[in-house]
Image (cartoon, rainbow, N blue to C red; front, side):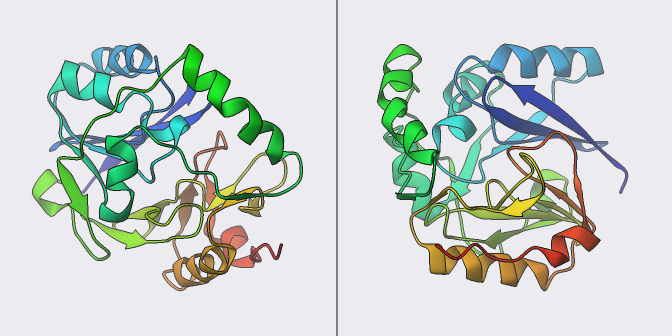
Length: 223
């Protein structure tokens, strides 16, 4: 299957539009008020067949425009079942923070008050090993908890991984080292995903994919 990956830069992180002959799949939505940029990209592509909104985890900068996009496109929203309640409550749980990340945690309530997220229930509650073949994509869900308990990776064609915030490419590529609800699970998730040997890795904070060779060299953060 031939696919194209469109990187959508938002004011707080990255969303991804996977374009295939069988339809479009959106991976994460960015923060609130990102829906217009995503819809303009779809219009530029001449496409209106968004089949699924897949959320890697329930955080403000990943689910912020989910409700608006569902209302405007009708596409169902999918997220791992463990994070589904947080999505339904528009709740971002940052857990343990390291270094300057405390500034983000401290400022989040103000950001949420200025640009609130609309709560919305998940249409599809995902589990580890679920596949997206019914949505026209040869892909599977890999549960990669740690950043949140329901964080997941989308592995497409056994070679392209959308990992959410499992890693970061702000500065030099590195494993998540700022936010986690469980640092031990975070380390285990990185090691588990490395066993799949993905060739291209897309994360929520980085404007280009990471090569598989560099991904294999990443070491888990030890708080």
